[in-house]
Length: 532
Image (tube, rainbow, N blue to C red):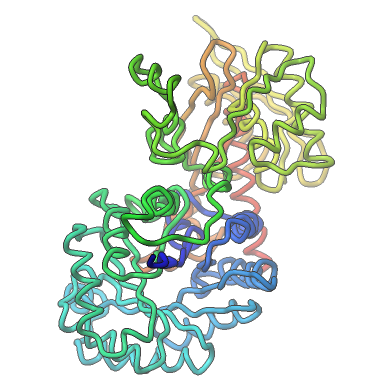
């Protein structure tokens, strides 16, 4: 029997995924995600774009040092355009890793060559050859990407890839940068490369697809069927515009249909749900309920016929079991009489390793919730964990919020905050509504001008006593120059947007927590980049 091919999982959540508007991550958040990716056994972590900013360089370097030095550490990659400054910066960042990789790219489609780079095909070939060779002189593991390969002339693409192989590339990544191709086209492109590029048998072919037409996963699987042995993905499919190929979708497709794809990965699938929640909490990007694999409805069954079938045999309506991705089916019901040991067991079953002060804080919040809610479900506990543990460093801490509003009243809020200096400050403000008045009162104390660009609220569970989760995004209103330099991407500067998350049974309190979370992210970024 033929052994299944091993597909390398190249996770770019920390680089391409972070380019989602509002998904800015600080260094500690990147380290937490990187550690979890390593525990999940991804093969390559693309930790960032080191030339983009001092903060991005430091984040890649820290991931290389803290995550990339273990005996079983994944490859740590840094992105670089085809120029020496980018490549030098990427090498300096990834060099501490046990297995460093430089990932360099140049556009190859005529539309990019003419309008973006303003160079000829001949100049593109020369630059690719020179810069891949230069990168190889520094590092043994070089990945080369012809940006916008999906819209490039195949014959010219073959030439560029041959040049890259001759210059020392060890992985050829084929990006559908704008999500333009269909599975048939992208599969044929990979097959054409295998058939027409000299030396391709000595390198690994990778696929990097975007989801503009909703085809990223389908295109990636088509690439695997046609010989790609590395796929570039993100947790929850986050990324620029409509996002990237979703790690969980590709991994579980191969896990569920091994006979069809004749391929497997090294991923520990039981950590998928936990990492999905972590990335959602840190980026402030909620997972849509009907999202494949990790959405809230992915293993929910409401139709009577479906429920009847599930009770008789889960295989009637589930092609995979929730335990496979780390979702608990524990029947342990927790309430106000539950003890710390039972609570810690439930937390562990949900995929979280909490001890000491972290466990104490979450347990205290759990007990408070039990006083107002008869049964506390898994979703409630996860909301508490995210709210207590996965929050930015608190420069300012919310101590008290009180709102007066109603028919015929002007909404008025009083807030009390503890500042970075330890001094407690209190102020009040009038707004157009209760949340607006809270935010105005906070602004009077913190004095960090910003614009609220997004506000969303949802109930974690059903019922009048449900915990509410609030996610917001803010942008500094002083032009951004006081906060950081614009971050370079393949398509230009990125707006600085900061997300915040809060959870509480009182949605006004949850809104205040979310706002403080976003403000602390913004102010922490200012502090870090001022030092840099």
